Length: 98
Length: 274
Image (tube, rainbow over all chains, first blue to last red; front, side, top):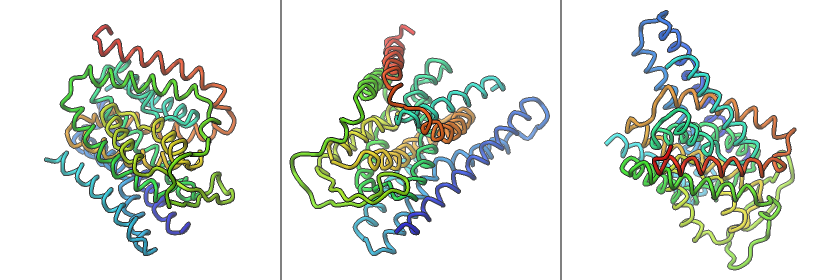
């Protein structure tokens, strides 16, 4: 159980790290752009957006990993509940897009 | 955006991260009033920034606690269903409601959080009374500590409270730890440490759902959110170190006074006086 749970923690933490890295990099470059050193602003905005999206979605990745770990354990009830949670988050995503 | 504003946002995030970790309340209680009163964002924009910061910092904390087996993931998943649903409804409502309603609700939540802070934490470990359920769980109550078996009661009614909590979180941008922890500890009989760890797990996913609605709607300001989020993550790490040295309980009353002041400021802003 401990090893399987750690997989979800590892996925979440690494997604967060990547998100932090992209956001911090995007912001540093934005400051350089603001000072007139860099001119490609649109690409910088995309970098920050990608970082922020990763930071927001990191818990979702963790939840999917938890669902997989419940399935591996044969705990269908909690895997089903996890699936409902994931689907609700995806509904939020669809709601925002629509 | 200039460098000074960026540093200011990082500082607010850092402060929220440190205080949230040391006092065991979500950083939203600091972020939302700071964003509306100091930075001048609308209540909806402030809620979006706050939810994003909370999603990132609480999922970092939850990952650590899950690895230490201090989170009741199964119970958390059950409470998450109505809470996420409430959060989506709350965030969607916030985009339609007038700002003063959100600020007035925020003031009420801050007053409640202040009262919650004034309560002695020891009182929260009272054993539950009443109906019993078959939900028996086993978790560690401290890092590397022994396992403790306990029973979670009143799961049915806790789902309704979870839904309301999620809606408040989505509407105001406050994570909802001050509602989640007493709900699990007093109402359901889950040990205190497991309640706070599980609350981090619940908040991470609830806040993410609300933040997603705001992000895709274009209400989330990427640069502001990015700076606050980085500050909050750094603050949470710093707070975790400080929490071992500082006795957060001795500062709770001062922090409660701060909550009441910020609640009053939000109320004045709701009334158009500020």
